[in-house]
Image (cartoon, rainbow, N blue to C red; front, side):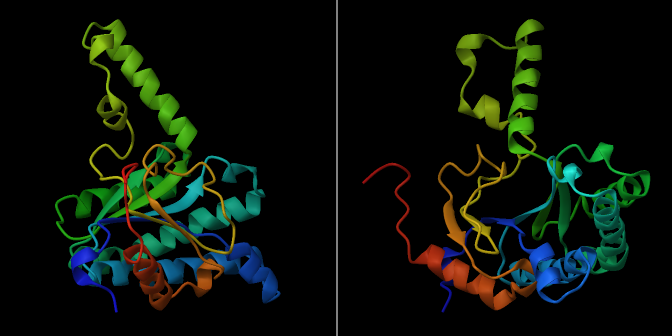
Length: 236
């Protein structure tokens, strides 16, 4: 059973395996992304039920633009459909939606849906649902360095006063605690340019389950694995 007193405050997920799930069922790749959206909805609901404070999902990376025009376009259309269908329920359940990444480079319809969602849910106080869109951790860190350099050149910051917090406060996640639990599905065992700075002391759980088949029960298994570990943060 999950220990309700040791629930991770922040879970980050790489939702991997949509394409392989579709191929396994001899369906087009976009069908896998659609199934992945449905899985994501159930995981959001489960996190809200468990009183998890933050859930961050890797929805579209800076590298995903390399995929076919049809697949990329389909992903953004599904995103708009998901937001339009689920916004009311997310808001009613006190979920606050945030976006990590340079989402302004997405199609106009997707930007409009995102900004509507951010505005409507901004004052909610329940689960903070962070969607990483057009996100890459190296690009995020580079952006932070440029912001810090600007402060230095403007005389607003002294180089001796730069700390780890200075960097953290210039990342997209500046108001979000670092992930306690980092989950990747589909059996792949790498971070894929996701929350590199923030995951320095995260507990990593790699699941062999393809994302569309990752159920709330699978999430519970990952949380129980997290709870069975001893976190030392570099100490003994």
